[in-house]
Length: 397
Image (tube, rainbow, N blue to C red; front, side, top):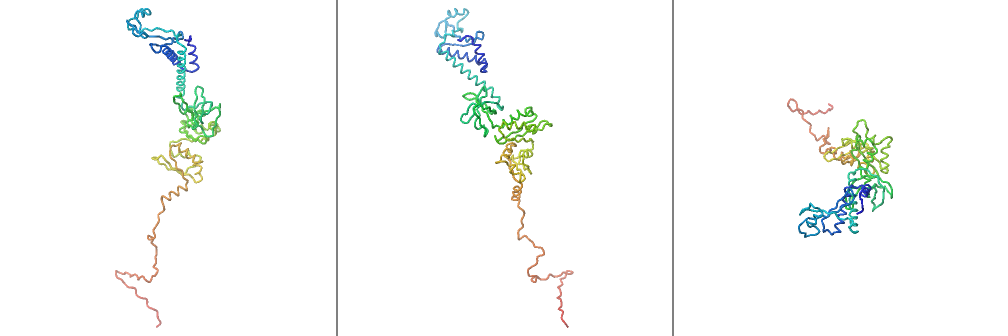
């Protein structure tokens, strides 16, 4: 139809990144659709791309018969042998058609089919490229706002940064560069949809992986990460090498490594905590910088009660409960924080001191108000009772 197509196909494959076989198949399908439209689907047609001459050849197949009933799909034996002397009855004979005889409408149909196939191939290629990149950080350019959502140009595709995935107090303008985390890739009716996030904890982990070589190499592992975007975050790290300090590796020389992450997150405060399998010790570290006095653990309920000094209570709880809330998310346990004074008051309320009733009090050495009402006690002597002799009065003779 348009001469040698090999050069055009190669150029489209290079520009669009489409597989050559997919494009050739689309071209064959387009030409076949155009041919069927021209002949109103009355003939048995096939289209094949000839790599040597770079053209799409269309073949019409008819069945060899002794007596023709359907002239569009059958051919007389004598006429068929004029084309192929070795043909026999019931054989299928293929005859190449002149592609140049197609009308302009048929060519337009072929063009539309090709464009549609190219778009489908592009969408499939974008989806296959990004579906395995979930969890990575990508750089893009802000193109426009749509109802509060950001449309970000990633090069081969456009991604969506929803309003709910944008960190508070982060504002962007058109043509600004943005670094975001790929949280989801899905195929929709309009093509692949790439969802970005600036609030996902994975963004924090990926940033540390890019800034800290020990994390990228697996020497230091980030066990958990929690965030309140734009405000504060906590990560728990552990080292698989006894000679490597996990907290020091993430902080870097004079805090250079963690400061790069803080700058990328627009000033978000980050607490780096050493991880330990002991939940009590882990909880104490997660509540830093507050000091902890005692910890009571309920393994069945996955909860713990933490007692802190009175002057450390507000520090442990944090502003609007932020510190204890992040610590609970980090360790995955429910945390109840109390001051030592409150804990003692609750213990006294649960276990009050023993009280003695008035009727049970026995006074020692009690004496009756009127001693003369008491009879003198007899004196026992050799099992005999002897009455006390009265004392004689001393009178003058």
